Length: 107
Figure 1 (cartoon, rainbow, N blue to C red):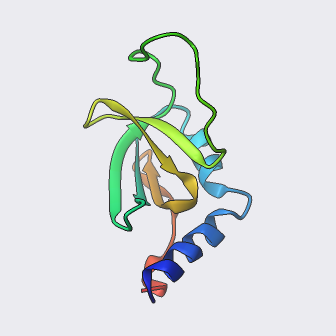
Figure 2: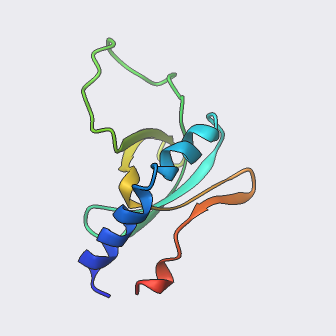
């Protein structure tokens, strides 16, 4: 299956009641490993967590971001990162896979 069809399939799967956002919210700030497809089509895994405010600089002038963009704190890079929830392949926390798309069916 070509890359464009693969990306469309991920988006279709994730849009069903946006399971990804529910899983991320259920982590309640715990460490999690998120694997997603980057804009350039490569896979990236990231150890991260939500709810980190310690390193925010400046005032509270937040930019409006899309509803599908999730901002997290990357524990390895020690910086804030964001990813599109429509491109998430798997989420792991509490020692278990909480969300997983079977991408082998599409390749």
